Length: 114
Image 1 (cartoon, rainbow, N blue to C red):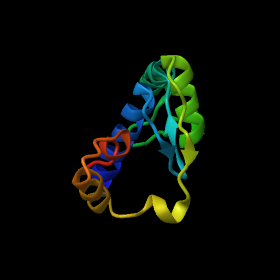
Image 2 (image 1 turned 180 degrees about the horizontal axis):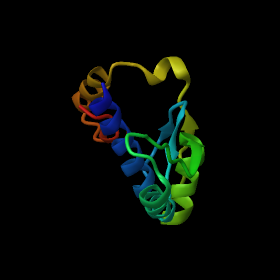
Image 3 (image 1 turned 180 degrees about the vertical axis):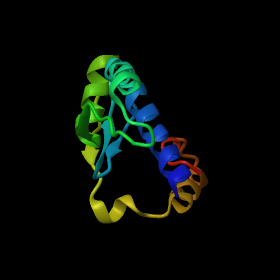
Image 4 (image 1 turned 135 degrees about the horizontal axis):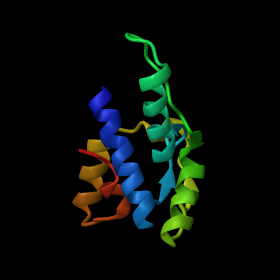
């Protein structure tokens, strides 16, 4: 399950950064700035306790907010629409087969990990 979520996140962010994100699903993800990660590691080395875990999040962004931020940074267009919750869970293999079956090699089926 975790590996699948990581693959989905990678596909979503790749589509965002390349400007071919058709729609954004509901939900979001936590982001950590590299400077915050470095500072947290340095602090953990001097102030952390052995055996403890620390959560590090610089910002929680919805996929929509992240997509528009990525679009602005990469000088590409943002997503065209929001994908409603119930349709976001439609089987990815079915979508890929349907789109490929009609010769559609679109950004949408590229962002669906298979």
